Image 1: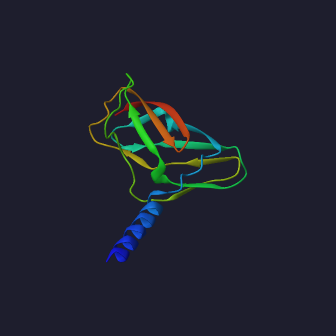
Image 2: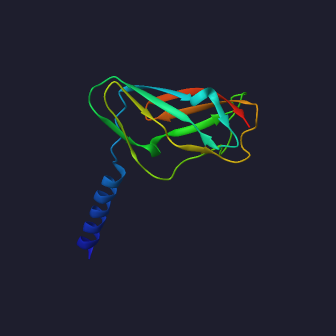
Image 3: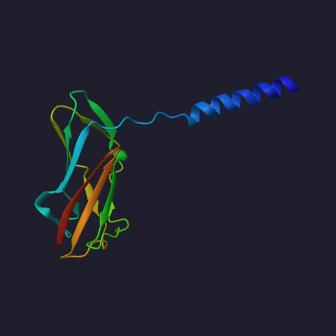
Length: 139
């Protein structure tokens, strides 16, 4: 009775240990810049025209899932605007290659979260990279 119990415990520890030891993604060898096209966001259009540009420091291809983006909107006082953006639920791979790569995350604005005529900032992080862009809201 002791041997099967001991073997079960050893198997649980071994399997549990491999489940915990996940591979940490490598840092991206690139610089990230962000801009909101036109510097303005229309509250009636509800589209958030964010353009991310990666300037690559290596010739090798680098990939990550778009779910790796952390995107936050801050008001003119630097405080987070909760749930200001709706993120697409379709997962896709972003591939960085060549000198520069541009990505448009395809975000939309949540109704009533942003106010017309105000200045805001969007902060984007992915792995080891972070970028900031300023924008104004218009009707």
